Picture 1 (cartoon, rainbow, N blue to C red):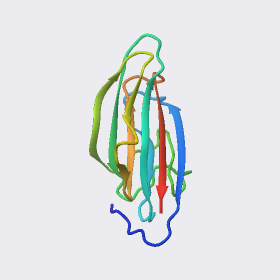
Picture 2 (spheres, helix red, strand yellow):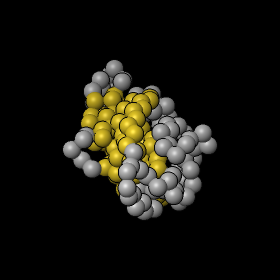
Picture 3 (cartoon, one colour):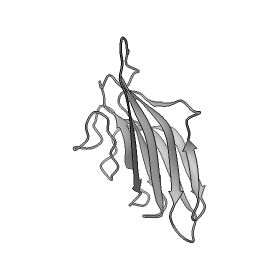
Length: 143
């Protein structure tokens, strides 16, 4: 887990992804940077939406050290994968038990923050109830 040395001309490619968190109380991979990718991933914004019509729901958003294990068998270098694959590595901390009121949204990260995933790091999300929360993420791959 390290910041790669990026020199010379570099490319910056931007992506977006969104999904409904389909499981409850299970870590789901959200976004990851593979080991030795030579890239940095900068999160521009991450918004959690409560799509339940009547009840609040909570979530946890954690940064993980992947311990060299890819998050998803179908993922490429810029792992924008969302699913219930096995979450490898160890929890490096994050947001725990954040409540989102029914039919509301919460901006977790916005463009004023410098949230960067180094090599071999991932973002993992967990919801308190299945199909009550959706997540939208916008990010760039640098390098």
